[in-house]
Image 1 (cartoon, helix red, strand yellow):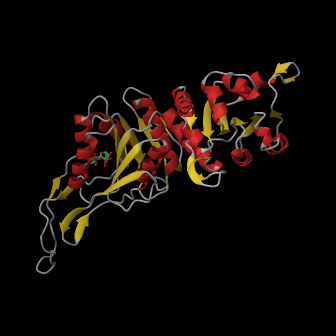
Image 2 (cartoon, protein in one colour):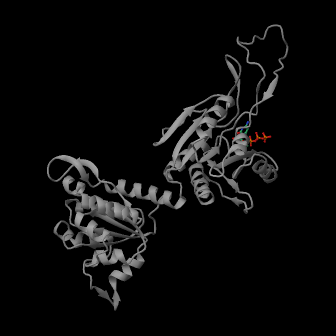
Image 3 (cartoon, protein in one colour):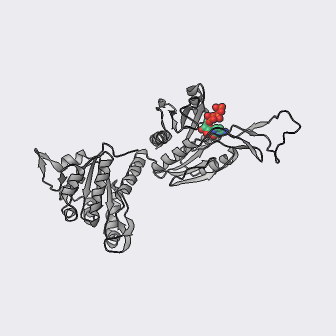
Length: 400
Ligand code: CTP
């Protein structure tokens, strides 16, 4: 997903040696389809020219507090135009001014007059960075709602390795997109438990009962939850792809899955039951391989498994949120509404698994989101990761 397409983005550059990276930031934003304008402090112009940034941003560069165009005061017009303001790189001086409400040049006045999302990336000498006044100012900006991009440890202009280096522009953009999304979805630091895949119920040491679930929807949900800033544990029966920031616990049977969900859910905020849990298991697991000699047919006696979603739905506290799925081949809405109610879920994702273009093994899905007392919301056919992002967004809106 591209979070910058068609966005109005103001890049503010201040006088750090890392100012050259602002040119790369502007170029990346243009590549993402953003409308970009640049404002510079006078010391920034000692490091990089306004001409370079004007050519790259395809716009004039604001440097003068008193600049006007056809009687419009530019810093006010630019402040209102911006959806996001990136201060990259930010010097100790500029951080100090913004944190203390000083607006004595084009840059600080524009920032003060704007209610855009604001992102700041400090870059300076390590001793300066650790100065208590600078740390106090950075903390103050964070409390004022600024998104702080922490400097990295790396090779500084001073010729040694320490904390203070500006992260690469593409890293700044991806971190910003993820953190702003999380802020909007209100899922930052929420603990989310997700189950994925079909369970395997043993018949004997070599055979088991399972189903067609691939686990893909659960994996996509884990990825989307991490993107939204959540802390995620995935309980899976299938080999999961490596997703940065996701803890994976592997299980096989419904009983094992239930045991893990139960113990992890105690401290969790959200449970998403995306697994295809087998409703039945063999009444007795044979300790030796069952031989075919001497019998024409074989009767397997099955007993019901615990319904994990229903157990968790009935035992959750008022601060916990439970999401289930309903895989149906017919009467989708009626069955799904019934499951929402009887399992006491807070949200149910209805899935028509009779369609060949959605469901179990497909990379795409189309769903209907059911929430008690709200109008059902049906999506079109989308890649599972997009569906997962929609679901996480909706969870954020409903739960928070
Ligand atoms: N589920 C569960 N434990 C079970 C069976 C299902 O936690 N033993 C959860 C699934 O993870 C899903 C929801 O319940 O979130 C609905 O699963 P589904 O297979 O659609 O329905 P069932 O409850 O099994 O009912 P039926 O098979 O009769 O449609």
